[in-house]
Amino acid sequence: MTSLKQFDPLETWLEKSLILGGHRVQNRLYRAPLLECAGNGPEAVETLIADLEPAAEAGAGMIQQGATIVTAEGGCAAPEMTRVHDPDFVSKLTAVTDTVHQYGSSIAIQLEHGGLRSMEVWHTAYRNSNPDLEQLAVSRPPWPLRVLDQVGFLKLNPRVMSTAEVRKLAADFGRAAARAVDAGYDIIHLSGANMGIIQQFLSPFYNRREDEFGVDPTVGAGIRFPLLVAEEIRERAGDVPLVTKVPSEAAAPRVFSPRLNDAAATRVSERLADGGFDAVVPVRCSVFWDMSIVRGEFPGRGWRDETYRPGYVDAFGSRLRAAAVAAGNWVQSKQYDFEPGWNADLCRRVRDRVDIPVLIEGGIRERPQIDDLLGDAADMVGMARPFYAEPKLPARLLGGDSDVSVICENCNNCAVSQAAGETGVCRTPEILEKAGKLRQQGAYDRETWTTSPAGGFPLCSDMTGK
Image (tube, rainbow, N blue to C red; front, side):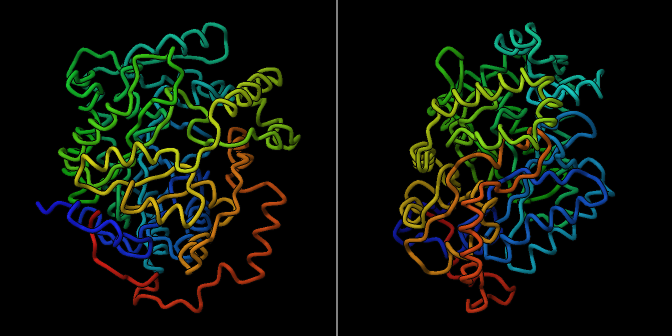
């Protein structure tokens, strides 16, 4: 195999194309997974198109549809997540993929199951509506979750999966991937972090199994489940490009252990590369769903807005509990300060050890920063929250201005209201005002660009490497 490291890093630049698992991506900028809150209702397809088309129209190389659930019930980590268990529904998503493809962009779908992060654990109204719904658990829940259950803050009803049930869940991922490929998705992205079920298998904090799906001592992680998922996807969906996030739980307080550190995340990435994955996205996170993945300001506006208060009460059971969650959110905002490109060191470490593309996300906000990261720490750069404020952000980043910065200020008002069932959009007036002025100035227009025959950004180079 030709080593990706034979190329001069100076040749890796944002507008050049990339071969990812045999699939050409037109440039190295992508919209990272966000919550589209589309659900599975009659307007789901239209909602997804409305959310994803602007980034494709503006020239993003890849659009990643946010976490979609592979099972018919349970597993949703937030309200109005889309499920892809129903072939009839998934077939309708061809309209989404066709829309993205007309601009020359590639589209990935992120497959997920929440496990112990699912709504039936933390969302009071959802739990009351589904009292018998069990959570899929890798092992007995770790002690912090059991404590929160005992004091009534969470409600655990776990079903520790048998070996056969683990294999069935892996097959659910494979079947979902096959449906997605039939609907025109170019890339399958596994949600391997953010405390979803794959992270729970990988993490020694959650995984204390004694069967083949337990922690592999040579890796320090439960590597067998994601490898089995990859096998199921290859068997059912063919040779589709396969990407996954790889968690390092280094952001978690030291009291929560054992956990994945950067060294373990690097070993996991090596095993996944050897096991047929086509790219990895190394991320530093915690063992819980917290602000380690949305670093920035405390979203005070989002918590104070009376519009969302009923939704917070539904989610957390009372105003008092909602206030307690908000207080915890404030503490976390101090613990997890915003740091530009906070995953760069980890990505660089992984990239030195694997010969597949490494994708980077987390706190990337300026074009000069992007140019510094490409060819050094990563091969593609993704952003998430900035797309809430600027749905057509790629038009500015790819438009030739070497000093451009996003207008997102990481205030997180877009994210916290999603717990109340609200859609993910920017809600900060001063940021929206800036976006409006940029639109008036034509900053998001592409009429003067030279386009490829497919309608997207020009395909510059067929580089695959580093």
